[in-house]
Length: 274
Figure 1 (cartoon, helix red, strand yellow):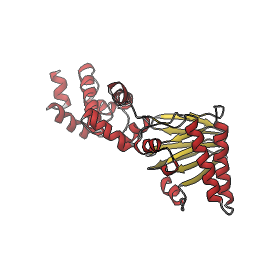
Figure 2 (cartoon, rainbow, N blue to C red):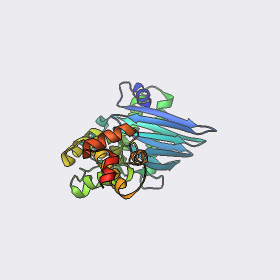
Figure 3 (cartoon, one colour):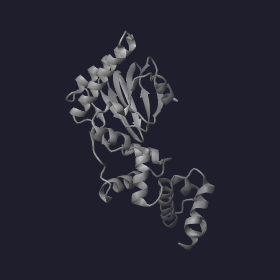
Figure 4 (cartoon, rainbow, N blue to C red):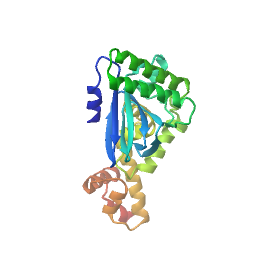
């Protein structure tokens, strides 16, 4: 996996640098970095980044911060390129911010466009770090580290990376989770994709979810899907198999098993009695 490749680039320094390019054709990369924050910068052409179900179109000079423990994919259009710098949280001197990064309580702000305040200086330092890394001259590690540290300081100073304990009340975390489920329950979503959509660390998301819903994400999602299936059974003549597929179940037998466990009857019997 790409995460292993990135980690292999670590030596005794708290960062890793990876460069990707597409020439005449497109390239599609699925990436997963479990513990490090990443900064992805487009250096040429157009790149599409997908986090959960959100697609970000980025152009030369744009950059984005990718939270730790976030699954994402990259589509490089022809004649495009990007740099990816993975950072240890030890580079974050602010204790509160570092704690936030490690626990998912941080605001990231999406794509930072090249025209935004400070973007040019941030990009300049990141590109300088990549250039030093490529040359590998004596002392390159400390020089690259200096450029990366300055870029991180500019991100923090510009308000692009701030500690912000998520609003975990009914109008915050719970509402966001329910909205995500309502929009995506038909899809093969998991706690990982939900956490990524909310820009939260997956383990932190699961703790919050258990606290507020008294259930794990998978069981709650299946319960939601069963309730939607019951509604469709009452209101339509759609076949049971089609209802299972329409509510996000990729196994008909599993759908029937969960439905009977939840209602005490099969989907067909439930429809007859509705």
